[in-house]
Image (cartoon, rainbow, N blue to C red; front, top):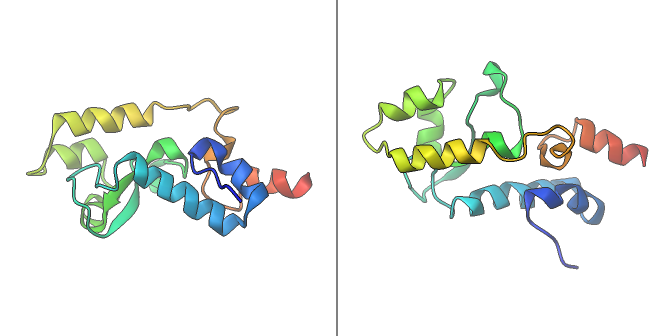
Length: 131
């Protein structure tokens, strides 16, 4: 079975494989978009996903708010504003900052973003169960 890995196909993936597998594919597609490197420092070690805008500050679990980040940067940034935190780092790079800003601008329209949600207790999962 062919499995599509772009964030746009997350909803399709939920129909064709388990929700856990669809989530894994979706998370991997975000890391792949950053060439499996930390969006902040460029490391390839201990890759995680970081909420650019932390959830405690109103950030969502959507693709445009998640970037590939090494665990060190993710933990160091914590709940801080990413631009304030990033500008103080020795590895600060204005080009990488502009890439993150562009990433955040992608498909924020509510109608288009349903397939970009990470959690299972959300609109996407509930809608699928009702079909």
